[in-house]
Length: 143
Image (tube, rainbow, N blue to C red; front, top):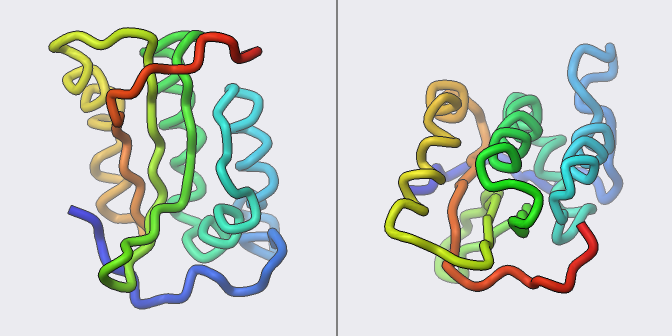
């Protein structure tokens, strides 16, 4: 279900401005917004490079994160990571939610979060997967 990208999302090793004219948010601004929402960023340098290569996606990610936090609350463990397919050259962002407990409506709730963003996400040059791995959230975290 992931969208293949022929562009190399790793242009440069440091977070850079997405648009030198200031029309797009800087990758570090996006990462700061995610951190403010208590979303763990697994590898900031790689994610910043991906967001720099996909500025249209960078504009959407903080809103999806905010909506995910709103839906699942402060006790949910949210993590943004760059997934690399081991079999093919495919990379994409994965925003994962972990909960203390799950029920039969969990995936429905996850889908409800991303659904309002479907059109924007389909038109973005990068790819964001919003999902869960059904593992238990760490309960001793300071969120």
